[in-house]
Image (cartoon, rainbow, N blue to C red; front, side):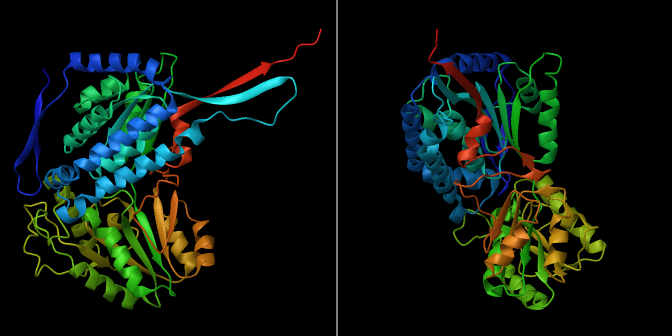
Length: 470
C-alpha cells in the first residue's frame, strides 16, 4: 500500500482528511486501464462524450455545498465565495461541450476535382493532468473536459492540499456513466509523479502550477530522450500581472476592482493583480480609494459568513509572503495598511492582513516576482509609454488590465503588451470562449476556447484520389 498523508486545514491546523497514495501496483494498473480504455473511447461518438460531460456537470452542481465546504476547509477560501467555483467549473465545461462538435469536425480545404481531401483531428492517447490547490476545480476542468471531449483518456493527479477535488471529479464522472478507465485519478508524491511523467503510456501532460513546478515537469519529461519518442505538454505557470490606471479612469470603479483582483482568494491566483501602475495625475486619489477598499476586507475564520479574506494555504506560504513584504519595506517601500484592527494577522499563523505598498520599484521582488498573497505594490507613472515599459518589464506574461473609458487607447496599449490576455475595466477573470494562454515564464499552450482542442489532438491529413484515368 502507498504512504498515507494528511490534509491540514489552514483555518485551524486540523486534519481535514487522510489520503493514501497510490501504490506502484495501483499506478501500473491505472496506466494500463487508461491505455485500453482510450482505444474504445476515441471511437465513441462525440454526442455520447458530450452527454457524459453534461452528466458530470450536473453531478457537481448537485453537491455544490459539499464542494464549497471542502474548498474552505482545505485551502481557506471564505465560504461566501467557495460555491462560485462550482458555477465557474460548470460554465467552462458546458461551453467546451457546446463547441466540441464544431471544433473537432474534419477540416475541408477548397474542393479539387478527382480528389477527396480533409484533415481529421485525432486524440493523443492518455493525458496526465496535474492540478494545483488554489482553484482546485477550475484549474482541473480546463484540461480534463477538453481532453475527454477530444477522445483522450485522462489521469488526474491533484495537489496533496486538495485531493478531494480529484475524488469529486471521479465520483461525478462515474455518476455520469463514463466507461471504466477513461477517467481515473492518482494520489502521488513528487517522486511517483516524476516516474509517471516519464512513462511511455503517457501521451500528453497538462500542468498548472509554479514556474519551478513546470521546470520539474520538463525535467521529468526529458527522461524520454534516447527513446526516440517525444510528447507534448501544456503549461500554465506563474503570473506577475499588472494593472494600469490611466488618468481618465473611473477611479472608484478601478480601485474597487483592482483591489479585489489583488486580494480575492487571499491573492492566491495566477491571474491576480500583482502590481499596480497609476497615472501620476490621479495617483493620490487612487491610492486613497485603494486604501479604503483594502480596509473594508474582513480577515477572519473563512467559515464565518462575514469573512471576506481567509488565511493563505500554508504557514510556509505565509512566511514567504511576509518575508517578501518585509524585504520591500527594508528597501524603502512604504506600507499603507497598519496592524491595528487586524487581530487575526499574527506571525505564526497563515492569516495575513492585506497590504498596499508605495515607494516601490522594480529592484524589489514585490514588483517582479509572484507574491501569491494579499499584497500589492503601487507605482505612479508619467504616461502610457512609461506604463507599457514597466508592465513589460517582467519575466511573466499571463494577463494585464487597463482602466480607462477610452477603448481605442486600451487597444493601442494592449497591442504593445507582452501578455496572453488584455483586460479593459476588469481583471482576474477567465472567459471560456477566449484562449487562456501565457507568454514568457507564464507558460505555453492554450486551454479553453476553440483553440483549447488543438494541443489535445493531432492533425491527420487524408489525401484520396477518387478518379483514375486510363
